[in-house]
Amino acid sequence: MSESGQDNSSQNKSDQNRQLLFLLPLLLFVAMAVLLATGLGKDPTELDSQLIGKSIPGFQKTLLFSPNKTISEKELQGPALINVFASWCPACYTEHPYLMQLAQSKAVKIYGLNYKDKRDKGQKFVNDLGNPYDLILFDDNGRLGIDMGVYGAPETFVINSDNQIVYRHVGIVNLDVWQNILRPRMFANQEGSASKSTGQAAK
Amino acid sequence: MNRLIKSSILLWASIFISLVSAEITIYEFDDPELELRFNNLSQELRCPKCQNNNLADSDAPLAVDLKDIVYEKMNQGQSDEQIVGFLKERYGDFITYRPPVKPSTWLIWFGPFVLLLGGFVIILRFVSNRKESTIVKAEVAETSSADLISQWAEEAESEVDSIRDSENQKN
Image (cartoon, rainbow over all chains, first blue to last red; front, top):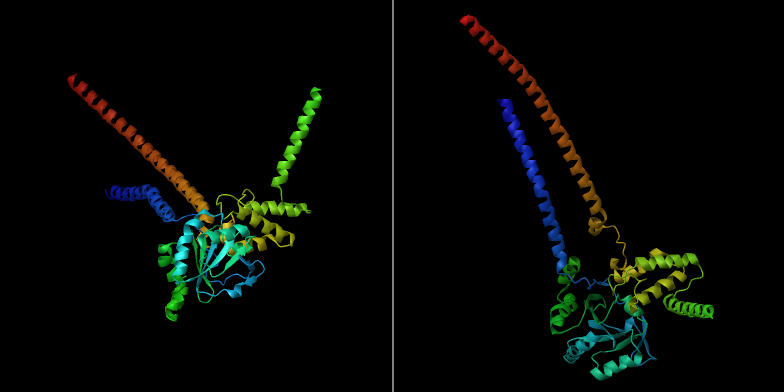
């Protein structure tokens, strides 16, 4: 009598184990689903910039409108935006009117980087659509672009007052992007030194 | 005559092919070992613009620029590690198809082996469980059949006895 009781309990136990074994695929499925779902919302074509927190890379580049004048990174001073554009880039034409608006509002200094363009075509682009830029660097061979990790146009880099790159935006800039993404990051280090240190720690 | 036409077609075809291939192979090396390294590296590096292409297969302007840089640096005597490092500083781990081993990539490096090992463990446990249970069942069957046979033998004997008794009483 007592022996059969033991048999029952051990059988119950192995039944429980078996039930857990049946649950295992379900658990694995849920884990995989969660893992894959976190990747769903992300845009795979948007890469994180490797230059966040670093200074603007060194360069010697001519200006788009003065081929004889060469300037270096020391002549840039943040807070500012560096906007990568080209005449061959359709989205740059879409973006340009807002850059004009932004420049006219004097809310921010915008530097232009004419990326992998022909000089006459780049000049025509700016002459036709207006010039929102403080100065325009001419990157004909695209090497400055590569130093900045540019992989397309338009891209816009946010430079803080220490001339550090704090953010890179891929795609067009509009009112929404400026107000909600670029401006808060550009002036993040001017809201007191305490928030600066925590902000950097959070990154 | 026929032979002449054939050979002229062949000649034109070979000229055409050489023109086409001249357009593709821009990078020339004096050292075949360098060429091999260049080919390997440009196949292992990924084009940031056209994400599912390697540099070798991509004609995107950025991919061409990056190949130029690899070519330049290789001819300057830089190692593969130095060149990949240079590109990683600008484009991140994304630039290479061979991700580095670090905590955030442990899943992709070791995950398949963990799953394989788990599968082995489950199979081993399944097989050993099955062996044990068949042995137990077999033993139970043997003892019970032996018992049954002796029981039947006893019952048969007692029945025979009772029949004999009743026959004796009739007589």
